[in-house]
Image 1 (cartoon, rainbow, N blue to C red):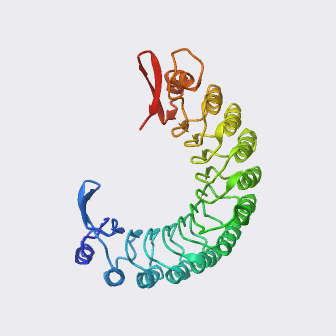
Image 2: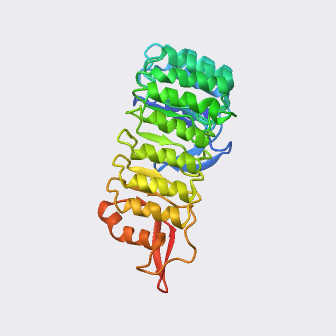
Length: 384
């Protein structure tokens, strides 16, 4: 059962049903009460308070729901540290089998997160922890670090937009060097403010040591060219990371060339690379295009909105005319020629048109652009 809790009374009544309750979701929507549907059933999005969560957790305990509850979600709600205390008690309840704890986009501070992390340090069942869009700050960040030093069950951790400071993020990278099960880490815009050299080198050192991480999201982290070069060199020594997101990181030509060297290397293990919303330009595009001619590991590449024009885009299409392993290519947002192209002519639009009708169709390559012809001129548009 999943609830979008219109009222606390309805949530409590749901706990009295005969069928074992394995999931509870209290999802708000921008602090407004809005009717909608979830999985084709009526749902009412509304807000709940700390006292509501305290009462709900009490009901879960009284009615012996704990041994069946696998998912507990409180998202987009104006709840804070009072609710955190109740949740921490739920995590330490005898017989707790909770696997997913989603507290995204609430009002938990470092104090509340510290209470939850203290409980998680002793918990052995939670696999997925989502704390994104909460103002953790240094105190909350260090609480997460201390929890990770003792917890050995987490497999997925989301800390996006949590306003961590430099000290907290450095300690976090340190503890991530040796995690037995943590596969997926989302640190998108996790740090409040920092110079690229302050934190990226610690991320690189972590990647040199970590032998299990599968996915790392560092978008909006001010990585820059220096950071991209540092991370690329570290990934020569990492054989386990499969998904890397570096979107919106002010990565330019030099950073793109560094990443291209990684993609050309036999040591590259990446399946998915997102470097969208950067500034590779034509020179960076040429480097990536050249790498595509020899890379055999990538399955997904996002190059959207990177200031590439004719030269860079043509290099990408040339690389894709040889590459036979990439299955998803995202290019929209770059500067395609507005005048279009005539069929059979040279240029990136004509090349993309040829790939879409031939090689991409044969290999089932998913691309976010499409071509169409008007008065004998091939034009390009976004493929939604």
